[in-house]
Length: 250
Ligand code: ADP
Ligand code: MG
Ligand code: MG
View 1 (cartoon, rainbow, N blue to C red):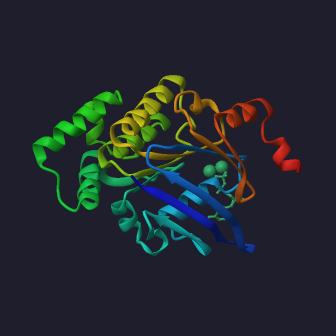
View 2: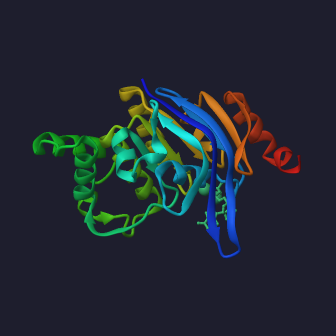
C-alpha cells in the first residue's frame, strides 16, 4: 500500500519574459489502487505538475512538499524517483537514437529493480506484455520513439509501465492522438496493471473520452495551476456536458 502526497506545491519556469509561476498550490493525495483523473483546460499546468513530480530540471519547485510513503520525493534524483516506484508517461515522449526498445526496457528494469532481470524470464515477460498490447515483436528492435506513430509511442509507454511495475503512474494525455482501437488497447493495459499490481494512477487528460475505458475514482479539475474542484466520476460527466467555461469565467 503506497501513498503519494502533494502538499501546497508551487513551481516556476524560466521564460523569455522572466520567471513565471505555473503551479500555485497543488494539493492532492493518491493511494495504491486509486485512479485520479486530473482534468483541465490547455495551459492550466497539468503537464507542469507531471514534470515537477518527475523531477524535470526545467521546473523549479519554490515551495510545498511531495511525499511517497513519507519519503521526500523532491530530494530524490530522477533515477531515485523511478526506483522509489514513480512512473511518468510524458505527453511528448522523446526519441532515443541508437537505443532499441529491447535494450531500453532492460536498462530501465535493471535500474529500477537494482539488478538485471534473468534473461530467459525477461524475454518471456517482454514478449507476453507486447502480445497483450498487440505490438509486433519486431517493434522491440526499433529505436526508442524514432519514427513511432502516436499510437506506438503510447503503447511503448504502457509497455514500460507493465514491465517496470511502478507503485504510482502518472499518465499525461495518454489518450491524445489515439484512434478508438489504440485507445482501447492502451486502456486495457493500464487496467491490467492496476488489477495485477494495485497501481495508483494519476490520469491527466483534457478530454473525458479515456474515462469511458479507465474509470476514475476521483476527478480533480485543474485550473490556473491548482485544483479548483474535486469530485467523483459524476464530475467528469458534468465537464463533458458543460466544458470548462464556468471555471474560466469565474
Ligand atoms: P497543460 O499541460 O495543462 O496544457 P502546461 O503545464 O503544459 O499546461 O503549461 C502551463 C503553462 O506554463 C502554459 O502557459 C505554458 O505556456 C507554460 N509553460 C510550461 N512549460 C513551459 C516552459 N518550459 N517554458 C515556458 N513556459 C512554459
Ligand atoms: Mg497542453
Ligand atoms: Mg499538457
